[in-house]
Image (cartoon, rainbow, N blue to C red; front, side, top):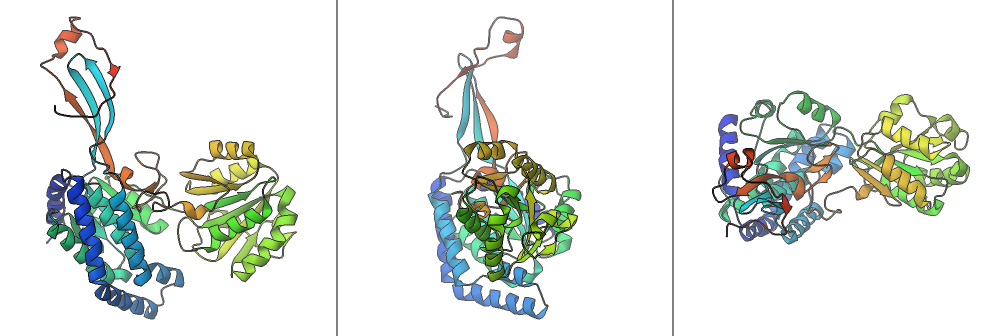
Length: 432
């Protein structure tokens, strides 16, 4: 089937999927979870083929880690599906209701976006998260994973699509693209596809953004900061920095730069450096950092680098204001953390840091749809239109305006025979 026919089938499926009941969608999700368990051996065997090929090709360890889809990952995605089933249906919610006049009522009601084009690299678990989020939110999805996960993605897509269809979901609600040529063609199908979500490297995201007129949701970089303030609990700060940097280094919400207030730098950095060394982290530092601990010099480019590896750049600064300026200038508006006991410093950080996720006294690794209670995520967005931060169900719906009347005409209002009341209503949309 060519790309145009795939997109047309997806659009047709999206219309049917958008009116499925909550019960039907949850039953399909339950069927998908069961099917993944039933075919676990096949899925893991396919993943072993991909891992072996990737190792032979000399793919970086960080990519291999993301590529792995063994029993632990399978259990994790099943838990994600179970949490997704427990969430309220995002479709059909009355967001606001207004009486325009007696018998003329306007409702803003949530509805699916339609067809999502999803492009991701390396992580087969992303395929499960994205497809199940799309099903729950009533969207059809066209998926393109990285070639390094080809066998894993193929069987996952086959299992999920079939289980969903057997449970009553429309044919074509999930389809897997196989080639880069199909991706290039998909980027021009704005009559069929409503949103593109790229999830991968800076190069991938930039390419997508520059080569389509379809709306793009996502982030190019994950340059996340932890700032240790003058009023920080230094023991807490060490644990937060270590978790933010080392808990899982190859993800977009891992910390890449540490900023430290000069008032606590001499007390804080030596012990932290010892712990970073034990964790295998290569440390780069500004001149003030180098005066305290013997680390390599950080360059201007290091402040702009997403390492996705055991590398951390450290800068010592004299004020909170300069730390905020550094974050807004060099950061990617993804996730940034302040560690402090000073609530006024935290308030300034919350108000002035221009990022999708801004945290106080906790790890940057909490920036995640599952941890936010969103039932997983299609990705993390640094956009300022439609959805921002971890994008779960709420980022996959839009809304429509539904107006109920009793024969009203605009001429009556234009000529002064009737007047608008514009009164807020406390009720859900109903045809009764």
